Image (tube, rainbow over all chains, first blue to last red; front, top):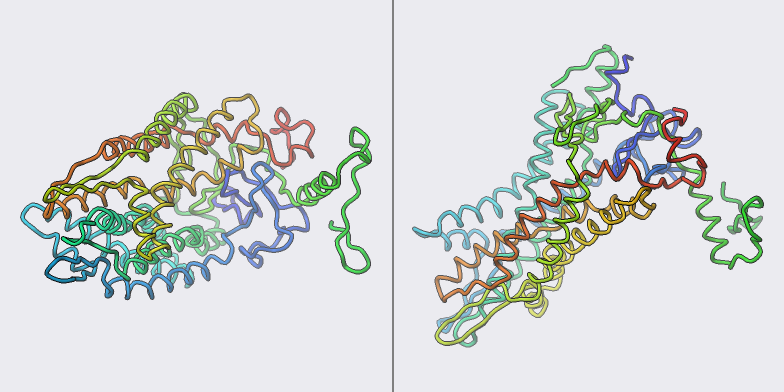
Length: 232
Length: 265
Protein backbone atom coordinates (compact mmCIF):
# COMPACT_ATOMS: atom_id res chain seq x y z
CA UNK A 1 0.00 0.00 0.00
CA UNK A 2 1.57 3.23 -1.03
CA UNK A 3 1.27 5.88 1.67
CA UNK A 4 -0.08 8.50 -0.70
CA UNK A 5 -3.05 6.34 -1.65
CA UNK A 6 -4.01 5.44 1.90
CA UNK A 7 -7.00 6.56 3.91
CA UNK A 8 -6.69 7.12 7.63
CA UNK A 9 -8.85 4.06 8.34
CA UNK A 10 -6.61 1.79 6.25
CA UNK A 11 -3.68 2.98 8.35
CA UNK A 12 -5.63 2.39 11.57
CA UNK A 13 -5.80 6.11 12.27
CA UNK A 14 -8.82 8.08 13.40
CA UNK A 15 -9.33 11.73 12.64
CA UNK A 16 -11.23 13.86 15.12
CA UNK A 17 -14.42 15.51 13.84
CA UNK A 18 -14.09 18.12 16.55
CA UNK A 19 -10.56 19.37 16.03
CA UNK A 20 -9.15 17.45 13.06
CA UNK A 21 -6.33 15.80 14.99
CA UNK A 22 -5.16 12.48 13.64
CA UNK A 23 -4.53 9.82 16.26
CA UNK A 24 -4.08 6.10 16.73
CA UNK A 25 -6.31 4.05 19.03
CA UNK A 26 -4.45 2.60 22.01
CA UNK A 27 -3.71 -1.11 21.74
CA UNK A 28 -6.73 -3.07 22.85
CA UNK A 29 -9.19 -0.29 22.05
CA UNK A 30 -10.56 -0.05 18.51
CA UNK A 31 -7.18 -1.10 17.24
CA UNK A 32 -6.71 -3.40 14.31
CA UNK A 33 -9.92 -4.20 12.56
CA UNK A 34 -11.45 -0.95 11.44
CA UNK A 35 -13.59 -2.76 8.90
CA UNK A 36 -15.31 -4.94 11.47
CA UNK A 37 -15.69 -2.37 14.17
CA UNK A 38 -16.72 0.27 11.67
CA UNK A 39 -18.39 3.09 13.48
CA UNK A 40 -19.86 0.91 16.15
CA UNK A 41 -19.67 2.74 19.46
CA UNK A 42 -17.88 0.28 21.66
CA UNK A 43 -17.58 0.61 25.42
CA UNK A 44 -13.85 1.07 25.09
CA UNK A 45 -14.07 3.91 22.61
CA UNK A 46 -10.97 6.05 22.38
CA UNK A 47 -11.08 9.78 22.88
CA UNK A 48 -9.26 12.59 21.14
CA UNK A 49 -6.20 13.47 23.24
CA UNK A 50 -6.56 17.12 22.28
CA UNK A 51 -10.27 17.92 22.50
CA UNK A 52 -11.78 14.91 24.34
CA UNK A 53 -14.19 14.04 21.50
CA UNK A 54 -15.12 10.37 21.23
CA UNK A 55 -13.39 8.93 18.19
CA UNK A 56 -14.72 6.46 15.65
CA UNK A 57 -13.51 5.52 12.20
CA UNK A 58 -16.90 6.35 10.68
CA UNK A 59 -19.88 8.11 12.26
CA UNK A 60 -21.63 5.53 14.39
CA UNK A 61 -24.46 3.64 12.66
CA UNK A 62 -24.45 6.28 9.97
CA UNK A 63 -26.57 4.36 7.42
CA UNK A 64 -29.21 3.32 9.93
CA UNK A 65 -29.55 6.72 11.55
CA UNK A 66 -29.65 8.61 8.25
CA UNK A 67 -32.28 6.22 6.89
CA UNK A 68 -34.34 6.62 10.07
CA UNK A 69 -34.33 10.42 9.87
CA UNK A 70 -34.96 10.31 6.14
CA UNK A 71 -37.95 7.96 6.36
CA UNK A 72 -39.36 10.12 9.15
CA UNK A 73 -38.95 13.20 6.96
CA UNK A 74 -40.58 11.48 3.96
CA UNK A 75 -43.58 10.51 6.09
CA UNK A 76 -43.98 14.05 7.46
CA UNK A 77 -43.64 15.47 3.96
CA UNK A 78 -47.16 14.31 3.04
CA UNK A 79 -49.16 16.03 5.83
CA UNK A 80 -46.83 19.02 5.49
CA UNK A 81 -48.11 19.56 1.96
CA UNK A 82 -51.71 18.45 2.39
CA UNK A 83 -52.64 20.18 5.65
CA UNK A 84 -53.06 23.96 5.79
CA UNK A 85 -50.20 26.00 7.24
CA UNK A 86 -52.15 29.24 7.61
CA UNK A 87 -55.77 30.00 8.39
CA UNK A 88 -57.02 33.48 7.54
CA UNK A 89 -60.17 34.64 9.30
CA UNK A 90 -61.97 37.70 7.94
CA UNK A 91 -65.49 39.04 8.27
CA UNK A 92 -66.33 37.03 5.16
CA UNK A 93 -65.28 33.75 6.77
CA UNK A 94 -62.24 31.55 7.34
CA UNK A 95 -59.90 30.30 4.65
CA UNK A 96 -57.07 27.77 4.99
CA UNK A 97 -54.01 27.64 2.77
CA UNK A 98 -51.51 24.87 2.22
CA UNK A 99 -47.93 25.69 1.28
CA UNK A 100 -48.68 25.33 -2.44
CA UNK A 101 -51.74 27.58 -2.16
CA UNK A 102 -49.53 30.12 -0.41
CA UNK A 103 -47.18 30.07 -3.39
CA UNK A 104 -50.09 30.63 -5.78
CA UNK A 105 -51.50 33.46 -3.65
CA UNK A 106 -48.14 35.18 -3.63
CA UNK A 107 -47.96 35.10 -7.41
CA UNK A 108 -48.63 38.60 -8.74
CA UNK A 109 -47.04 40.98 -11.23
CA UNK A 110 -44.83 42.38 -8.46
CA UNK A 111 -44.62 39.49 -6.02
CA UNK A 112 -43.63 36.66 -8.34
CA UNK A 113 -39.90 36.57 -7.38
CA UNK A 114 -40.89 35.93 -3.76
CA UNK A 115 -43.38 33.35 -4.91
CA UNK A 116 -40.53 31.53 -6.62
CA UNK A 117 -38.38 31.80 -3.48
CA UNK A 118 -41.10 30.10 -1.44
CA UNK A 119 -41.71 27.51 -4.16
CA UNK A 120 -38.02 26.61 -4.27
CA UNK A 121 -37.41 26.74 -0.52
CA UNK A 122 -40.57 24.98 0.65
CA UNK A 123 -41.47 22.53 -2.09
CA UNK A 124 -38.41 21.84 -4.21
CA UNK A 125 -35.59 21.87 -1.64
CA UNK A 126 -37.22 19.45 0.85
CA UNK A 127 -38.17 16.92 -1.82
CA UNK A 128 -34.82 17.24 -3.62
CA UNK A 129 -33.05 16.79 -0.31
CA UNK A 130 -34.93 13.59 0.51
CA UNK A 131 -34.27 12.17 -2.97
CA UNK A 132 -30.59 13.20 -2.94
CA UNK A 133 -29.92 11.66 0.47
CA UNK A 134 -31.72 8.46 -0.52
CA UNK A 135 -29.55 8.28 -3.65
CA UNK A 136 -26.37 8.84 -1.61
CA UNK A 137 -27.39 6.19 0.92
CA UNK A 138 -28.29 3.57 -1.71
CA UNK A 139 -25.14 4.09 -3.79
CA UNK A 140 -22.86 4.11 -0.73
CA UNK A 141 -24.48 0.99 0.68
CA UNK A 142 -24.16 -0.82 -2.65
CA UNK A 143 -20.47 0.04 -2.64
CA UNK A 144 -20.64 2.10 -5.80
CA UNK A 145 -17.34 3.54 -7.00
CA UNK A 146 -18.75 5.66 -9.82
CA UNK A 147 -19.11 9.46 -9.68
CA UNK A 148 -17.61 9.73 -6.21
CA UNK A 149 -16.63 13.33 -6.69
CA UNK A 150 -20.09 14.33 -7.91
CA UNK A 151 -21.71 12.44 -5.07
CA UNK A 152 -19.66 14.18 -2.39
CA UNK A 153 -20.42 17.49 -4.12
CA UNK A 154 -24.12 16.63 -4.00
CA UNK A 155 -23.74 15.96 -0.27
CA UNK A 156 -22.15 19.36 0.27
CA UNK A 157 -24.93 21.05 -1.69
CA UNK A 158 -27.60 19.32 0.38
CA UNK A 159 -25.72 20.37 3.53
CA UNK A 160 -25.53 23.98 2.34
CA UNK A 161 -29.06 24.60 1.07
CA UNK A 162 -31.00 22.47 3.53
CA UNK A 163 -31.46 25.22 6.10
CA UNK A 164 -33.25 27.44 3.57
CA UNK A 165 -36.37 25.30 3.76
CA UNK A 166 -37.02 27.00 7.10
CA UNK A 167 -38.11 30.11 5.17
CA UNK A 168 -41.75 29.10 5.13
CA UNK A 169 -41.83 28.50 8.88
CA UNK A 170 -40.62 32.06 9.44
CA UNK A 171 -43.05 33.48 6.85
CA UNK A 172 -45.99 31.86 8.62
CA UNK A 173 -44.69 32.82 12.07
CA UNK A 174 -44.44 36.51 11.32
CA UNK A 175 -47.55 36.73 9.17
CA UNK A 176 -49.56 35.19 11.99
CA UNK A 177 -47.91 37.31 14.66
CA UNK A 178 -48.61 40.56 12.84
CA UNK A 179 -52.07 40.11 11.41
CA UNK A 180 -54.02 40.12 14.64
CA UNK A 181 -56.74 42.67 13.98
CA UNK A 182 -59.79 40.99 15.40
CA UNK A 183 -62.55 41.16 14.41
CA UNK A 184 -61.41 42.58 11.08
CA UNK A 185 -58.86 40.01 10.09
CA UNK A 186 -56.61 37.52 11.81
CA UNK A 187 -54.19 34.85 10.67
CA UNK A 188 -53.41 31.72 12.68
CA UNK A 189 -50.84 28.97 12.07
CA UNK A 190 -52.39 25.77 10.78
CA UNK A 191 -51.79 22.08 11.64
CA UNK A 192 -49.51 21.53 8.63
CA UNK A 193 -46.84 23.83 10.02
CA UNK A 194 -45.52 21.37 12.59
CA UNK A 195 -45.15 18.65 9.94
CA UNK A 196 -43.35 21.02 7.66
CA UNK A 197 -41.00 22.07 10.48
CA UNK A 198 -40.44 18.37 11.21
CA UNK A 199 -39.41 17.74 7.58
CA UNK A 200 -36.83 20.53 7.80
CA UNK A 201 -35.39 19.39 11.13
CA UNK A 202 -35.37 15.68 10.25
CA UNK A 203 -33.61 16.24 6.91
CA UNK A 204 -31.02 18.44 8.63
CA UNK A 205 -30.41 15.72 11.21
CA UNK A 206 -30.17 13.16 8.39
CA UNK A 207 -27.48 15.25 6.68
CA UNK A 208 -25.55 15.53 9.94
CA UNK A 209 -25.66 11.81 10.65
CA UNK A 210 -24.52 10.81 7.17
CA UNK A 211 -20.79 10.25 6.91
CA UNK A 212 -19.52 11.33 3.46
CA UNK A 213 -16.43 9.17 3.93
CA UNK A 214 -18.69 6.16 3.33
CA UNK A 215 -19.03 7.34 -0.28
CA UNK A 216 -15.32 6.75 -0.78
CA UNK A 217 -14.72 3.57 1.17
CA UNK A 218 -15.23 1.12 -1.70
CA UNK A 219 -13.08 3.21 -4.01
CA UNK A 220 -10.38 3.44 -1.34
CA UNK A 221 -10.21 -0.29 -0.80
CA UNK A 222 -10.04 -0.88 -4.55
CA UNK A 223 -7.28 1.70 -4.84
CA UNK A 224 -5.41 0.00 -2.03
CA UNK A 225 -5.56 -3.26 -3.94
CA UNK A 226 -4.33 -1.79 -7.19
CA UNK A 227 -1.85 0.47 -5.39
CA UNK A 228 -3.04 3.60 -7.06
CA UNK A 229 -5.57 6.31 -6.43
CA UNK A 230 -7.42 8.58 -8.78
CA UNK A 231 -7.32 12.23 -7.98
CA UNK A 232 -9.90 14.79 -8.87
CA UNK B 1 -9.67 -0.34 34.07
CA UNK B 2 -12.71 0.10 36.23
CA UNK B 3 -12.31 -1.96 39.40
CA UNK B 4 -15.39 -3.76 40.59
CA UNK B 5 -16.27 -5.01 44.04
CA UNK B 6 -17.20 -8.69 44.40
CA UNK B 7 -20.88 -7.85 44.20
CA UNK B 8 -20.32 -6.21 40.81
CA UNK B 9 -20.75 -2.75 42.34
CA UNK B 10 -18.43 0.03 41.22
CA UNK B 11 -15.88 1.15 43.79
CA UNK B 12 -13.96 4.40 43.47
CA UNK B 13 -10.36 4.25 42.34
CA UNK B 14 -7.99 5.09 45.20
CA UNK B 15 -6.28 8.46 44.86
CA UNK B 16 -2.85 8.33 43.33
CA UNK B 17 -0.17 8.19 46.03
CA UNK B 18 2.43 10.33 44.32
CA UNK B 19 0.11 13.28 43.87
CA UNK B 20 1.10 16.41 45.74
CA UNK B 21 -0.59 17.18 49.04
CA UNK B 22 -2.37 14.98 51.55
CA UNK B 23 -5.11 13.30 49.60
CA UNK B 24 -7.00 12.37 52.76
CA UNK B 25 -8.21 15.96 52.86
CA UNK B 26 -9.88 15.56 49.49
CA UNK B 27 -13.61 15.93 49.80
CA UNK B 28 -15.45 12.87 48.47
CA UNK B 29 -16.68 14.51 45.32
CA UNK B 30 -13.18 15.64 44.37
CA UNK B 31 -11.90 12.11 44.90
CA UNK B 32 -14.66 10.73 42.68
CA UNK B 33 -14.01 13.37 40.04
CA UNK B 34 -10.33 12.49 40.05
CA UNK B 35 -10.96 8.82 39.67
CA UNK B 36 -13.46 9.46 36.90
CA UNK B 37 -10.98 11.57 34.97
CA UNK B 38 -8.34 8.91 35.48
CA UNK B 39 -10.71 6.32 34.07
CA UNK B 40 -11.56 8.26 30.95
CA UNK B 41 -8.01 9.37 30.33
CA UNK B 42 -6.96 5.76 29.93
CA UNK B 43 -8.91 5.65 26.69
CA UNK B 44 -7.15 8.55 25.00
CA UNK B 45 -5.80 7.84 21.55
CA UNK B 46 -2.14 8.25 20.76
CA UNK B 47 -1.58 11.32 18.54
CA UNK B 48 0.52 10.84 15.42
CA UNK B 49 3.79 12.68 15.77
CA UNK B 50 3.43 14.81 12.69
CA UNK B 51 0.84 17.58 13.13
CA UNK B 52 0.75 18.46 9.46
CA UNK B 53 -0.62 15.00 8.73
CA UNK B 54 -4.42 14.98 8.53
CA UNK B 55 -7.24 12.99 6.97
CA UNK B 56 -9.90 14.70 4.87
CA UNK B 57 -13.18 14.66 6.80
CA UNK B 58 -15.14 14.11 3.59
CA UNK B 59 -13.15 11.26 2.04
CA UNK B 60 -10.62 10.14 4.70
CA UNK B 61 -7.62 10.56 2.41
CA UNK B 62 -4.41 10.89 4.39
CA UNK B 63 -2.41 13.93 3.44
CA UNK B 64 0.02 16.53 4.69
CA UNK B 65 -1.13 20.12 5.07
CA UNK B 66 1.29 22.58 3.52
CA UNK B 67 2.28 25.69 5.45
CA UNK B 68 -0.03 28.30 4.01
CA UNK B 69 0.37 32.01 3.52
CA UNK B 70 -2.40 34.10 5.14
CA UNK B 71 -5.50 34.05 2.96
CA UNK B 72 -4.44 30.93 1.08
CA UNK B 73 -6.38 27.70 1.37
CA UNK B 74 -5.63 24.01 0.99
CA UNK B 75 -8.05 21.60 -0.69
CA UNK B 76 -8.27 17.85 -0.66
CA UNK B 77 -6.78 16.54 -3.95
CA UNK B 78 -9.33 13.75 -4.13
CA UNK B 79 -12.68 15.30 -3.15
CA UNK B 80 -11.90 19.03 -3.34
CA UNK B 81 -13.03 19.79 0.22
CA UNK B 82 -11.42 22.88 1.69
CA UNK B 83 -9.20 21.53 4.44
CA UNK B 84 -7.85 24.74 5.86
CA UNK B 85 -7.89 28.42 5.00
CA UNK B 86 -5.35 30.47 6.86
CA UNK B 87 -6.65 33.83 8.01
CA UNK B 88 -4.66 36.92 8.54
CA UNK B 89 -4.76 38.33 12.07
CA UNK B 90 -7.66 35.94 12.70
CA UNK B 91 -8.19 36.39 16.44
CA UNK B 92 -8.19 40.20 16.51
CA UNK B 93 -10.47 40.55 13.51
CA UNK B 94 -12.85 37.91 14.75
CA UNK B 95 -12.97 39.58 18.16
CA UNK B 96 -13.88 42.93 16.62
CA UNK B 97 -16.61 41.43 14.45
CA UNK B 98 -17.97 39.32 17.31
CA UNK B 99 -18.22 42.32 19.64
CA UNK B 100 -20.08 44.28 16.95
CA UNK B 101 -22.39 41.31 16.35
CA UNK B 102 -23.09 41.02 20.09
CA UNK B 103 -24.16 44.68 20.31
CA UNK B 104 -26.39 44.40 17.23
CA UNK B 105 -27.88 41.15 18.52
CA UNK B 106 -29.03 42.84 21.73
CA UNK B 107 -30.53 45.76 19.81
CA UNK B 108 -32.20 43.47 17.26
CA UNK B 109 -34.00 41.52 19.95
CA UNK B 110 -35.16 44.44 22.06
CA UNK B 111 -36.84 46.71 19.52
CA UNK B 112 -39.79 45.97 17.18
CA UNK B 113 -38.97 44.40 13.85
CA UNK B 114 -42.20 44.85 11.91
CA UNK B 115 -45.27 46.96 12.40
CA UNK B 116 -48.41 47.59 10.44
CA UNK B 117 -51.27 50.04 10.29
CA UNK B 118 -54.70 49.19 9.01
CA UNK B 119 -57.71 51.46 9.28
CA UNK B 120 -56.26 53.30 12.24
CA UNK B 121 -55.12 50.19 14.14
CA UNK B 122 -51.49 49.44 14.85
CA UNK B 123 -49.67 46.19 15.51
CA UNK B 124 -46.00 45.40 15.85
CA UNK B 125 -43.86 42.43 16.70
CA UNK B 126 -40.33 41.46 17.66
CA UNK B 127 -38.59 38.20 16.80
CA UNK B 128 -39.45 36.77 20.19
CA UNK B 129 -43.01 38.09 19.81
CA UNK B 130 -43.41 35.95 16.70
CA UNK B 131 -42.39 32.83 18.58
CA UNK B 132 -44.63 33.74 21.52
CA UNK B 133 -47.64 34.08 19.25
CA UNK B 134 -47.06 30.54 17.94
CA UNK B 135 -46.78 29.30 21.51
CA UNK B 136 -50.09 30.93 22.45
CA UNK B 137 -51.76 29.27 19.46
CA UNK B 138 -50.96 25.70 20.47
CA UNK B 139 -47.92 25.46 18.21
CA UNK B 140 -45.44 25.05 21.05
CA UNK B 141 -43.01 22.81 19.18
CA UNK B 142 -42.76 25.13 16.19
CA UNK B 143 -42.49 28.06 18.61
CA UNK B 144 -39.50 26.43 20.28
CA UNK B 145 -37.92 25.73 16.88
CA UNK B 146 -38.35 29.37 15.80
CA UNK B 147 -37.03 30.64 19.13
CA UNK B 148 -34.07 28.26 18.92
CA UNK B 149 -33.04 28.99 15.33
CA UNK B 150 -33.69 32.75 15.40
CA UNK B 151 -32.77 33.72 18.98
CA UNK B 152 -30.99 31.05 21.03
CA UNK B 153 -28.64 29.55 18.40
CA UNK B 154 -27.42 32.99 17.20
CA UNK B 155 -26.84 33.99 20.83
CA UNK B 156 -24.79 30.84 21.37
CA UNK B 157 -22.96 31.38 18.10
CA UNK B 158 -21.92 34.88 19.19
CA UNK B 159 -21.40 34.09 22.87
CA UNK B 160 -19.28 30.98 22.32
CA UNK B 161 -17.23 32.74 19.68
CA UNK B 162 -16.58 35.63 22.07
CA UNK B 163 -15.37 33.24 24.78
CA UNK B 164 -13.27 31.24 22.31
CA UNK B 165 -11.58 34.30 20.85
CA UNK B 166 -10.96 36.02 24.19
CA UNK B 167 -9.49 32.89 25.76
CA UNK B 168 -7.78 31.93 22.51
CA UNK B 169 -5.62 35.05 22.68
CA UNK B 170 -3.81 33.59 25.69
CA UNK B 171 -0.49 31.80 25.32
CA UNK B 172 -1.98 28.42 26.24
CA UNK B 173 -5.79 28.53 26.02
CA UNK B 174 -7.35 26.33 28.72
CA UNK B 175 -9.07 23.04 27.97
CA UNK B 176 -12.63 24.34 28.15
CA UNK B 177 -11.96 26.46 25.08
CA UNK B 178 -11.63 23.18 23.19
CA UNK B 179 -15.05 22.05 24.40
CA UNK B 180 -16.60 25.32 23.19
CA UNK B 181 -14.73 25.20 19.90
CA UNK B 182 -15.87 21.63 19.31
CA UNK B 183 -19.53 22.55 19.71
CA UNK B 184 -19.41 25.85 17.88
CA UNK B 185 -20.12 24.43 14.39
CA UNK B 186 -23.45 23.05 15.69
CA UNK B 187 -24.61 26.51 16.77
CA UNK B 188 -23.59 27.76 13.35
CA UNK B 189 -25.75 25.18 11.55
CA UNK B 190 -28.84 25.99 13.61
CA UNK B 191 -28.43 29.75 13.69
CA UNK B 192 -30.69 30.83 10.83
CA UNK B 193 -30.95 34.61 10.96
CA UNK B 194 -30.37 34.93 7.22
CA UNK B 195 -33.14 32.42 6.50
CA UNK B 196 -35.44 34.29 8.87
CA UNK B 197 -34.74 37.55 7.06
CA UNK B 198 -35.87 36.08 3.74
CA UNK B 199 -38.96 34.76 5.51
CA UNK B 200 -39.64 38.22 6.94
CA UNK B 201 -39.29 39.73 3.48
CA UNK B 202 -41.88 37.34 2.08
CA UNK B 203 -44.23 37.97 5.02
CA UNK B 204 -43.80 41.69 4.47
CA UNK B 205 -44.90 41.47 0.84
CA UNK B 206 -47.85 39.26 1.80
CA UNK B 207 -49.02 41.70 4.45
CA UNK B 208 -48.51 44.71 2.19
CA UNK B 209 -51.61 43.55 0.28
CA UNK B 210 -53.80 44.27 3.29
CA UNK B 211 -52.08 46.92 5.31
CA UNK B 212 -49.35 49.52 5.43
CA UNK B 213 -46.19 47.89 6.69
CA UNK B 214 -43.83 49.84 8.92
CA UNK B 215 -40.33 48.34 8.96
CA UNK B 216 -38.91 48.49 12.48
CA UNK B 217 -35.36 49.37 13.52
CA UNK B 218 -34.64 45.70 14.23
CA UNK B 219 -35.28 44.83 10.60
CA UNK B 220 -32.32 46.92 9.45
CA UNK B 221 -30.15 45.86 12.38
CA UNK B 222 -30.83 42.20 11.59
CA UNK B 223 -29.76 42.63 7.97
CA UNK B 224 -26.45 44.10 9.15
CA UNK B 225 -26.15 41.26 11.66
CA UNK B 226 -26.51 38.69 8.85
CA UNK B 227 -23.43 40.10 7.13
CA UNK B 228 -21.52 40.56 10.38
CA UNK B 229 -22.06 36.93 11.35
CA UNK B 230 -20.88 35.77 7.94
CA UNK B 231 -17.78 37.98 8.25
CA UNK B 232 -17.16 36.73 11.79
CA UNK B 233 -17.15 33.12 10.62
CA UNK B 234 -15.00 33.95 7.63
CA UNK B 235 -12.39 35.76 9.73
CA UNK B 236 -12.04 32.92 12.21
CA UNK B 237 -9.31 30.31 11.80
CA UNK B 238 -10.09 27.48 14.20
CA UNK B 239 -6.82 25.72 13.45
CA UNK B 240 -4.92 28.63 14.95
CA UNK B 241 -6.66 28.08 18.31
CA UNK B 242 -6.42 24.28 18.13
CA UNK B 243 -2.67 24.53 17.57
CA UNK B 244 -2.04 26.13 20.95
CA UNK B 245 -4.85 24.79 23.10
CA UNK B 246 -4.20 22.76 26.25
CA UNK B 247 -4.71 19.08 25.56
CA UNK B 248 -7.37 17.00 27.25
CA UNK B 249 -4.80 14.41 28.30
CA UNK B 250 -2.22 17.03 29.29
CA UNK B 251 -1.99 15.60 32.82
CA UNK B 252 -0.55 12.42 31.30
CA UNK B 253 2.10 14.20 29.27
CA UNK B 254 4.28 16.41 31.46
CA UNK B 255 6.17 17.85 28.52
CA UNK B 256 3.06 18.61 26.45
CA UNK B 257 3.09 21.87 24.62
CA UNK B 258 6.76 22.05 23.82
CA UNK B 259 7.22 18.30 23.38
CA UNK B 260 4.19 17.59 21.25
CA UNK B 261 6.10 17.16 18.03
CA UNK B 262 8.30 14.54 19.65
CA UNK B 263 5.41 12.20 20.49
CA UNK B 264 5.91 8.69 19.18
CA UNK B 265 3.76 7.97 16.17
